Image 1 (spheres, rainbow, N blue to C red):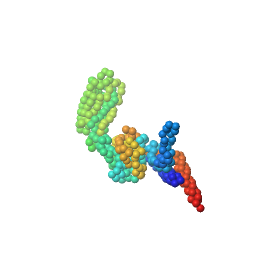
Image 2 (image 1 turned 30 degrees about the vertical axis):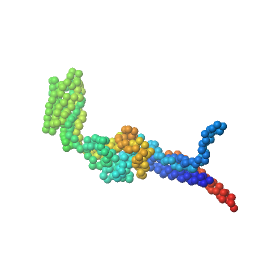
Image 3 (image 1 turned 60 degrees about the vertical axis):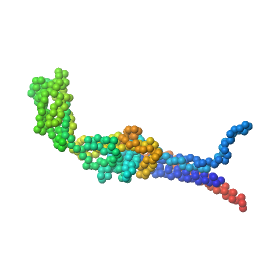
Image 4 (image 1 turned 30 degrees about the horizontal axis):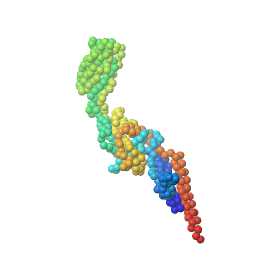
Length: 391
């Protein structure tokens, strides 16, 4: 009878643990990026009443007889199934679609989280609600991200500048009319930039000659001239380039068909300086900044971490996890590679708690607790009867 008492006590403890886990799941039903947990039970050691016997001549074998000594909690596992998406339209809200974790730094320790409700602090650092710093790679002045560099705090201050770049090449496209009268002049201009970002007008003058077109270029005080000829089928025969004041002008796309005048400036590689105005996030985690000069350039990239055994991670509070000896080392890299999910801006991952399943577990835990308490009261009644044998 004492065995049944202790078995009932172990059942109460195990189902109390199940009730605690279920209650925590329900409490976090609206927690961003929360992953629910499940309780697993297993029986404890069993007392041997009689051992198994082998069959012999004239006697059959016998099975072992054992009495179980109760139940215990075998483990509490975390369910990393993807949660539903919640659109927020906030540029700093980021959701992982697939596997992986954001890397955040809390003091000197790197932690990992699925909750992407980030914001910027007074220093322009991308932080979690409790102030942990989101990790990634910063872009250089040319907008290039080197993922071979160590992780660093992602910063996006409003004062971020895109430096000016001098124009080194320009392109003109279109058609010079083959049937134009000799002496016809076509003038075209294009805005280019010097090293300080000042606008300098590049002027090209096309003059019809008996054999083709002469080209005269003017950039500031620098001048240059050239000549262009075309084949009978309108394709360029010679004179497809011109260098004016250090700017290489590409004219190779021009054609010489009759009846069409469409020559125009197409593109150039210089730019004025610009300040950061806003940013968007790409699926690979690249933070693409929009600058006041009308251009876009990468300013950083968010890193994601993957694990061989995510279930081995230890919950560290604030919806974060830390590595353990059974989770494996963090495999940090770009989103969308090596099993890591992609990123979506303006959305958050909701909790993956299934309320219908949790309320069912709540009922199961309650009934299991009640049944084990009844075992204890029944054992107590039997002990009372035993005591009453001596009056």
